[in-house]
Length: 312
Ligand code: FAD
Ligand code: NAP
Image (cartoon, rainbow, N blue to C red; front, side):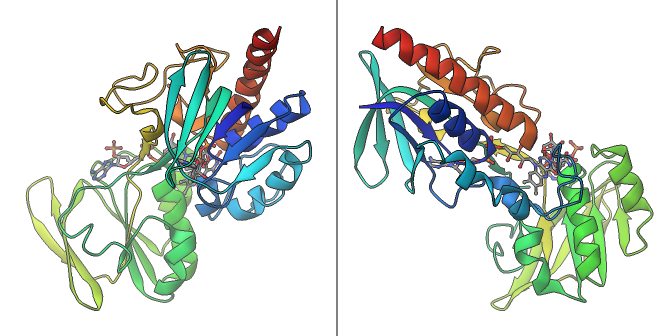
């Protein structure tokens, strides 16, 4: 029986592991289906993590975390969790390879993943011109023209990153006001390699077996425009990864809100004793690395007192 199972190895999960093991929990496993680090490893520039003065890539930021967080005995298991069930006074963790594990407490830190925009051809050309990761795929478009879709921090920051590599970046946004930080908006507006296409959405992506060839855009007046680009980067927000909490009958193990975000209190406790959530998965998450890490620490401290109370 594990003292604590942590699901997800992003900033929240890693920090939860550090605090739980340093705080004295003995048998703590962090399940992470890929490499620890989380979604920030896809970011090309991070400039708002306190203590890191220079602008770093997400990969650079996260590189030292696993080593530090595992120093006190946290075990990393590279496995995908299928589902968490509650049984009497413990939880059952079901892995997607069929294995099962029992744990006294669980912290869910599964984060979020990029949303789809919903235009025709988005799935067909995914990985062949449609991308959600500029650091991963930007280099394929060196000295070419590309499009970026979205008006939030991610879209604008990644447009700036792509402008360093590509000949030109068309930033397509469905309104004329951006959600991104004002300083980022200013940098985008001052970048002469970025052309803004506002009040416009993507209707269709078209191409051939070789990949994407262009986009049909449509503006507020229903006027269409053919934009010939070999690549589009879609940054239209994130969906929370709450699948592990879904039970066989379709209900959730704990309370979630209308967007599927896990309802927690200020100690990251869900409405189920021994079950905690931290990071982007929780209600009102500010979706920042520093906040996810803080949540992870809070959840671990709550799990510590919960397990101590069970053991007496
Ligand atoms: P995540 O980082 O999403 O980590 C969740 C982890 O859980 C993932 O590694 C995933 O593989 C794993 N997982 C999911 N489901 C399972 C499962 N069933 N079984 C096992 N493992 C699972 N924030 C900032 O503060 N500054 C920035 O500059 C910034 N830039 C960003 C740029 C981009 C392009 C993106 C996408 C995000 C950016 N963010 C930024 C937001 C930041 O990355 C997130 O807020 C933060 O990573 C959330 O951490 P988390 O631990 O909650 O979740
Ligand atoms: P976001 O803030 O939710 O922005 C999504 C953008 O996509 C919005 O501009 C939205 O338009 C647009 N959009 C949504 N659905 C669309 C569709 N179907 N077609 C076309 N456009 C669509 O998402 P995000 O930029 O990924 O950011 C997520 C969170 O992470 C935010 O809280 C953000 O602040 C944070 N983050 C922070 C940093 C940083 O601090 N440096 C960096 C990256 C991300 P509308 O504006 O019209 O709704």
